[in-house]
Length: 60
Image (tube, rainbow, N blue to C red; front, side, top):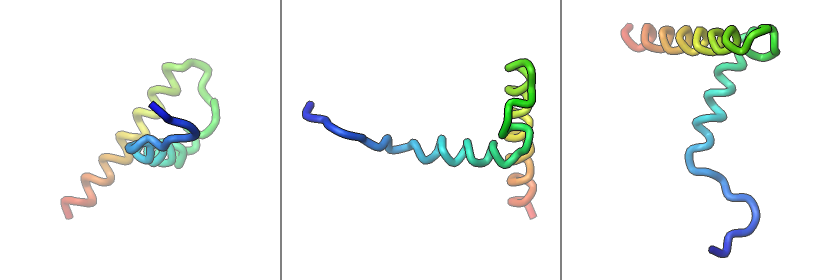
């Protein structure tokens, strides 16, 4: 194990891309919510909106 320096994880770009999708929604960029449950609901809602638009666009 002669590992030194920074090693890029192979699938890290998937997580980074998902974070960029979430941060396109204004409410998910800042800490507007007082409770963590509300912020989690906003993240879930933004992903539902994103995926429903993509599914609707594919069916045309």
